[in-house]
Image (cartoon, rainbow, N blue to C red):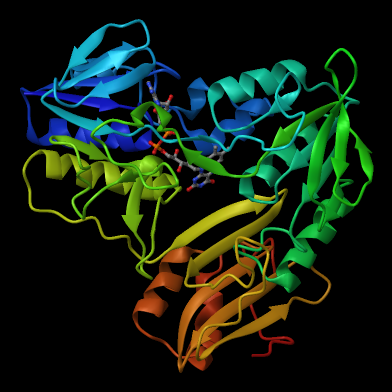
Amino acid sequence: MHYVILGNGVAGMEAALALRARDADGRITLVSAEHDHFFSRPALMYVFAGQTSLRDTEPYDRDLYGRMRFERRSGRVASVDAAGRALVFEDGSRLAYDKLLLAVGSKGRKAPWPGADGPGLHSFVTLRDLEALDREAKRGMRAAVVGGGLIGVEVAEVLHDRGLHVIFVIREGWYFPAALDRNESTLVAEHLRGHGVDVRLGATVDAVRRDEVGRIRGIRLTSGEDVAADLVVSTIGVVPDTSFLAGSAVRLAATGAIETDDALRSTAPDVWAAGDCANVTWFDGTRRPEQLWYTARDQGRVAALSMLGDDVAYRRGTWYNSAKFFDLEWTTAGWVPATVGPDGSRVPPPDEVRSWWQRVPGRPESQRIVVQGDRVVGFNMLGSRWNHEPLLDWIHQRRPLDWVLAHLGEAQFDEELSPRFRVSAGRA
Ligand SMILES: Cc1cc2nc3c(=O)[nH]c(=O)nc-3n(C[C@H](O)[C@H](O)[C@H](O)COP(=O)(O)OP(=O)(O)OC[C@H]3O[C@@H](n4cnc5c(N)ncnc54)[C@H](O)[C@@H]3O)c2cc1C
């Protein structure tokens, strides 16, 4: 049996390990165009910042490939010949498979503005993106970072740390409306401005301005304002890196994500998909890719079991995530409904849903607890560190708000750095 895994990221690697755990003799080949070794994509910002080497972000030792007898193939795959059961590389060579896992991840969404194509316009998703930005970003330059999500704030931070003047351009009326409400976003924007970042809320890019030799001069906003910049980083989201599958037997959703069934099988025989590139069913019944490290890991493991013939289904657990906005910690767990839709329009709270929120006096810190009916369903914690595990337990145990408020301190990390939780000005 020859298992071929296209993509050497967390979904691909965890699938390879799960296959080897059950199939000692099968041939397993990992294919990647990006790097010969599995590294941590979430740690790319620290590599850019010079705080760690790329090698130090590798989750496993390099001998693992040898010990596991994983074969490796470098190169970009141009198409999948599902009828002939082979990958076709850009140089025309082929790699035959018996079972194929597509774990091809994401790439930066293409910047749609007139003038965007050309030098000086960057993304921050892949190693090549990092290398290109690293070559160009020099102390004293002005950088426009366009797009107010998690990657945008990371890029703003690392460029600011490098000594660039950062203009953070956010289309929506507040930062990261998919996850933060107006109170929380105000707190983050204040924090970023306090660090010297020029945060522009409600600002939409109309065009990228270039001079007569094509060098970036800045961006024009739809308000008519010209914002001077020497480089632009587009952080307007990621899309599945699947354009090479167009027209193949592997069906894609309109977003480009690979359609999968519950067992992560694609529509082509003996072809599975996992990680950022796979379209999966969310708790609310919608179909979208999940774009998180741990969900990619879990999907890789489930896809492997399915490839081995087990009767498995991928079920996403209760949502959690954590990140930092500069040095401001953020932990979210459970259901925290967005208050603004993808098009920027206001979304009314779902039935019976209300939020308890407080800002800790004198600190860039807040807690929000989402309640549905009489039970807590979600948490959004800003400015201090929280352990998501008890938060998830309490959601599963259907705890009421009073009980959670009485116990919340138990879920707090780093009491020496932030005061122990207590209700100060909270309100529902
Ligand atoms: C800057 C940044 C920060 C992030 N921070 C966080 C975080 O804090 N927490 C979190 O949970 N998630 C974070 N994420 C998201 C997380 O990194 C991804 O969800 C996860 O890495 C997806 O893993 P994957 O295995 O699906 O794909 P990937 O890691 O993207 O791996 C896909 C691989 O497939 C290869 N490939 C694709 N197409 C081809 C082809 N045609 N031929 C050959 N090879 C190909 C690619 O080169 C790549 O190496 C972050 C992402 C970015 C970009």
